[in-house]
Length: 232
Ligand code: CA
Image 1 (spheres, rainbow, N blue to C red):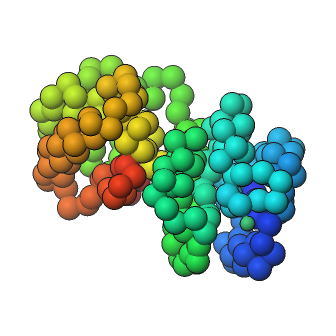
Image 2: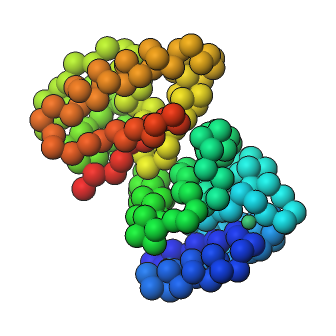
Image 3: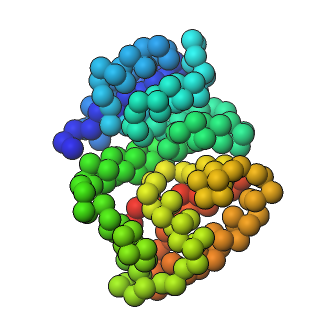
């Protein structure tokens, strides 16, 4: 990826201008769309590497855009919205957004989230056949075909549930996974009463993969879910 294409779907001109300036400062290419309709058209024609999406657009709700786009594309979507309720974040993430940032946002924070999304794009395009059986992130390594995980080359002993959780997070590195998403993938159904046990499994998993590493792999988004971070 040389110069990444970023699509900014935002109807507030002050915000989109600020974002445009940020893209220029990073030498990212970008395109602006002010409505959901134009945004969707631009996703098809411009083929962005990452989308920055406002939820409150004049013609559509951003969540509907996420749902539509996920029907045909896996492109990372970072929601940048003034809606700060956890339920709005969860709705957008459940619809398939990768990340969520609340306005007013800090420039450094937005650029950091963009880099996370761009790394996911780079990682996805690296994957080819055999290579995708091995996951490596910092000192964590997962051998999917053997069903084993390692820290610093040493196998860590995980319960089947912990291993499933780890694989799910790893396969979605850089993306915030909501409780609902995780429950659906691992338990097979969404039941809010399972969230406390999910937390317990996550704590146990975190303890095991954190041993021998000074970096935090799994980020907690309080009231929302978890994300596996990219480590160098
Ligand atoms: Ca708006």
